[in-house]
Image (cartoon, rainbow, N blue to C red; front, top):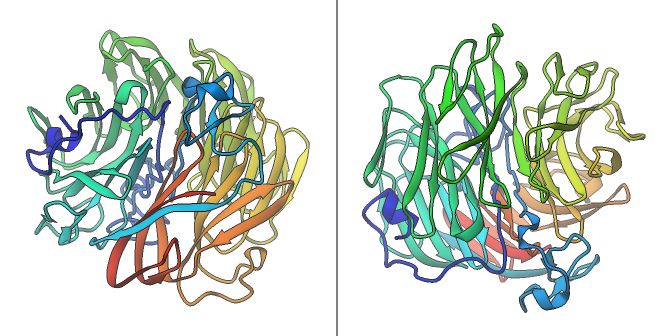
Length: 528
């Protein structure tokens, strides 16, 4: 049964084929999870969700990311030779992933671009082969080519009824309204064997076929659903505490779930036989690993006050976490102190949850790299992060980025967390970063003003979506002329294709060109 039919008994005809495409996609975003309530308050993505002040960008807490977030796949889709790869991604790269090209430069190509009748850009997106799943909030109606989905619930902030749509490329397969007045799907992840992890927030209730998630609290609750390839919910969890929140989640190569969240002092989260409860007055983050049936593998409390904004599992069954460093913290490798205006942490644990490395960025000084608006991605041997920054940033491993009074820094690290490359963008709205199978690093986002580094000496008349490759300290931008268009959700498939979506009005020069006199949703798949 397709997931949308499990979520609500309406929609089109079921999809019968499986969606492996030779590998595993661990979203997004990003998924841009394109918007998140930051502790119930404002976030910075411009127009990604029902309300620009509360657009959902992937994590629902003060440690959450704001703006597009990209998830690239695990090496569970690994190859040894070109013979292991499908025809559409014929080359086995050095990172043992199938790709369209072996190494840069790769020929850029828009595979498709289309638009749908919808006012708001999606908040979550995931891709597996030709299969694309998207979710967002209905503002009046949404039409993906099946039955028109309507809602009379006003959209704004967390309020509004979400939709969930399954597409085959640009073609509608299923779509449905999720029957609740106040909810949002923040992230979708594809895992092994067609499994999906669906994460979000709701108030009061959320109906999922036979499963009804409920809460009597006026405070929004975070939840996750583990859904199999047939669309059946096989595991669900509601974080029904006043402060406890699920912030991030990912699939391990073997199908295990790795989850990160946050608890206030003396609040408890329980997964089967595992219970975690912090004693610190300011609470603490947590990290757990669960088997597909919900049996806990391990669980641990993170240092007090540290909130995970991003989580990626690694090919060796480990996990990378990142977020804004609050004051000081010891993740197992020694004390990290915040000696800059703002700084972020990146930590790696092995398959059993043991510490591998932990570092802060930047090292010190009256500079900043903001974690509240950061993006993060990783693929074997390459880690990329980005965020608003200023000053001269000294980075672990021996490197410096000169951001000036204001910029958006893209930092590239090796698999030990050492700085190896980076660049500074300007007038950039909440960039996402993505690492493709050949190790190339891209920043994806929206230009909002004069951006000389990207070729905009003066501000464009409206928002302009751009994809920028970062290599050897330089920038190679590709922007799409637009009257007013923004990116609200991004994902990369296992072969390196980018799938972008957002909202636009007027003309958008992508593919053969899109036009709409009224606000509309755009969706494109391309090889950057």
